[in-house]
Image (cartoon, rainbow, N blue to C red; front, side, top):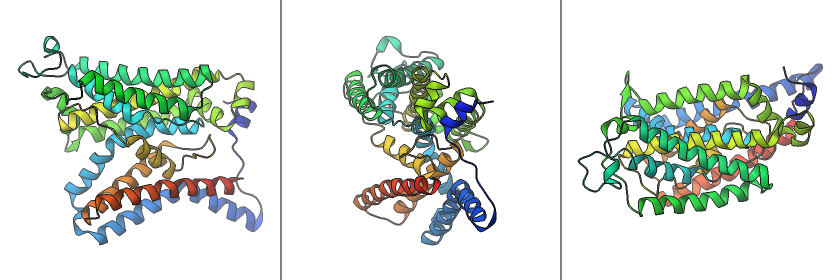
Length: 348
């Protein structure tokens, strides 16, 4: 059980009350929790009217597959935002993980191998190396924020730029191709008719939800985001937990990098560009508060990710210009933050 100080740090307020005001408060609270699900259902219905191809099984599976890597990043971003932080480096982590892990997954018969002496390695090697790289970048993010008191925006903006450059340097600006079948299975294979990447997202979403909602670490994440000073007073090691939060976010971004590289059969230094913004948008749409920490859930983030996927898919199916697609996505990002701000005022 959380202590009284931790509960105060989390900042939860009782819901309800007597009479009409109590009922309205309860309705508002319920809408905050499940309203995003009704919005998602409404978007699916609208999409089915706009394009008959939308409800086809292949297209629906493609939607889920397309957002699997954004969903993976968004899981980590949720914890970061809940702790009142932000991570702009996740897209760059995707790129660095993709090229590094791919360089250890190249086939022995590939003439243009990045490291000819390191081809044909066991399947586990590129996975472990890739996950280590992403986790290390996340650790650096957390250490900078916890130990130097640099604002999360500045710290992760710096690593975003540096890591992107490192990906270009490592791969010499070229795609790393000729990957093994075992490695490509992650992004291209399926189990029981379901893409393996989607199953991976589902498993990691369950683990992340349990970690944030049922463990002491999860309570600490919400406490830090709700009131960092109260968290310190209650005895929470804020610095240590911030490092863990960002390390886990880096880990999940590296999983996304491996999924993307294996899906296209090539690790490219330009991968992941803009993924961090899509992940942040998915989390905020799903109810994670960007304007005040301590609020957000993994199920909400998953629904927000699916909303992004449905939107992207319907824009393509209806032949909306790519330029207009960018404009619409930009409007949605701003709109999501405005809605979040309104939710924050209602909670107050």
